[in-house]
Image (tube, rainbow, N blue to C red; front, side, top):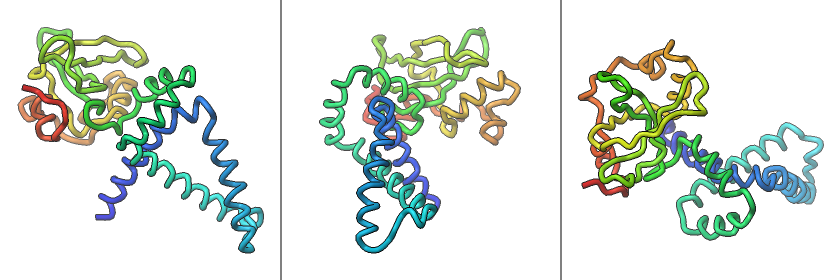
Length: 223
């Protein structure tokens, strides 16, 4: 039960981090928040007789907890319409949208249509499959096809885009963006089974994209 609660908190806080990070880069909001928090809360503590300067470690723990709660709150706001109004104001800041899109590529905590999936598709060879990433589960311009990215190794900042039929995309459910990055950096020295600490699976045991979406109750509709 505790492990489940921790995973929920961690995942929600991670969403908050990626929601807050573009703002941090653009307006250096972390330093501003910490400075204001230090000034405001410090004065409040001094009012009741507690001097933060005399308890540096305790003050650091308090600031860390408050900042973690802020990220958790941001994670919840990301799921509401309120963040949409706030973000519409931020989009007026030059460069905010570009930075946000770049950062979201590395956000493996996304859900719904924008969740990052590690998948297997038929690749360059006549036989066998390549492992790639789906940064969203939105249908392509071609009906029943979805975009899969195959990154290069060992430097994964390049790659290829494929429009793949939904029945030819197999989801590696326990794999994450970080697992795929580790696989690429190892240049195949470490197998994906080794990275996931699991036994090799039959392709028939992996769910197709359609089956995965149905099982996870995604808002995306696939007929």
